[in-house]
Length: 154
Image (cartoon, rainbow, N blue to C red; front, side):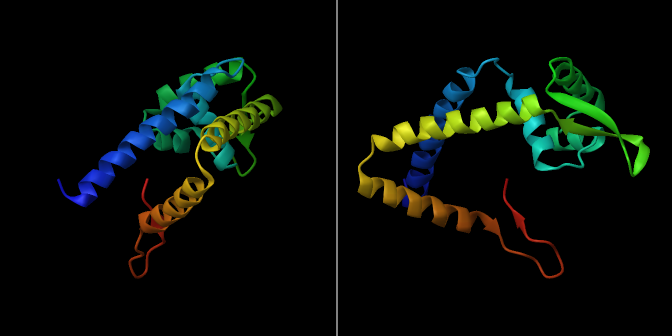
């Protein structure tokens, strides 16, 4: 096995452990929010001009599936649909104060869970991990083609 494959396997295993830590933090949240609904909230939080078609595209689902997810979030008070002031035919999706609190709480829980794991690592290993993650992030940037916007890998 070559070195790159060995490292890729170690990264994959570490990512699985990272996902497990983050998932435990999500499951500890009250009230629990299903991952698909949480993804909707995260997408809407990242773009204040999200409408149903953009959401469906971001989720890679048909608009009716995105609409059903929004129905559930709206019913629990985590999402609002309002007419877009620029085009009244469009419906814009907005977070409520409850969903903003939920996302902030989840972010805090995740960071605390990660800090707990990192606290069990020696300081030198923490610094090595930080440098390695920064280098990985820099290497993951897709080179920009002339005349196009810079993109990052997903």
